[in-house]
Length: 213
Image 1 (spheres, one colour):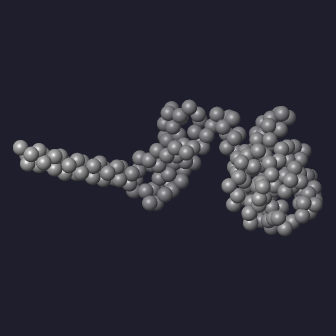
Image 2 (tube, rainbow, N blue to C red; image 1 turned 60 degrees about the vertical axis):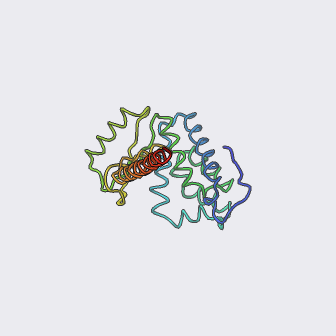
Image 3 (cartoon, helix red, strand yellow; image 1 turned 90 degrees about the vertical axis):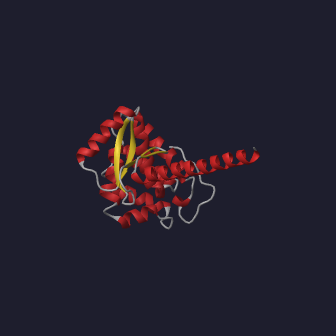
């Protein structure tokens, strides 16, 4: 699998703005390799490794991702802990990351692989923010409406933002659709201000015209 070297390493590689680009290279390589051998859902093993191995054992995760742990020690841990439980593809993928000292990118690789796999499957995550938690019925209704309006199958990710006064803020990729009450009030305030300034300017114009006569 390919490796794209970072020219300089900060105190933590995830602070480097190019880390996401490097992680994407590995994520795409993993997905392509999984597809070539007929793996139906390559995210299953990634998610299982994160949820069942790394999160319950933070010390193991720290050792795997720390720059203080030698490459040889990381490879040894993978051999002892991961290989007996993992598929050959996934074990070899982690080996490649360890050999190139990229295991610290695992959290970013997980996210990139998830987003790309969903995109390939015709799906995309849509963040829906509300002032209070949405009910299942509301989420289903929003999902149906988004499905009818978007060219892909939306995966609704609800989030709570208590600063919203009401309504919803929907984010699709880099585009934000703000129907919150706070946004509408701000728009109304801007409209009234523009109208007020227009009336003042119109009055000045009429006054100047009268003076000229």
